[in-house]
Image (cartoon, rainbow, N blue to C red):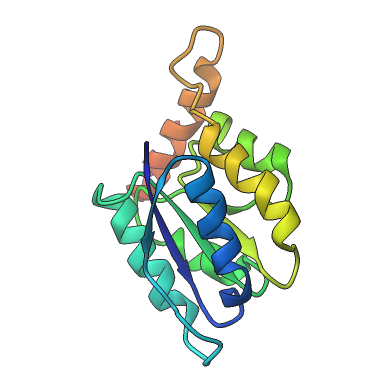
Length: 156
């Protein structure tokens, strides 16, 4: 069982409950970082809270929502150790974790609906990074290069 931090701005709020249900249905715990209404709020605030929860180990993974998924992805990726991406299909949600160590899934509530959430969220949660498995060393090498960039160095 994992602890999944969820955060959303007003644009993502309409999809928040569907995401929480999908996380719980997959057997995981939801850590709710807001927002709780359609009242306008700033998405970087929620991306920061979820990103820090993942970075500091308070959450195992995160799911962020806004209207498009783009704003929360950009904001969350400013936090070292956070690998956030939009994944509006099952393949990207799974592959992002398996190959790229994605630890925050970003969704656009104005792009997808609850039916896709029921497929995408479990794919993200069930996936595991493969970089430590024989034959998949290239994934670890690439993620390590990302970590080097985070340290503001040129990847080798």
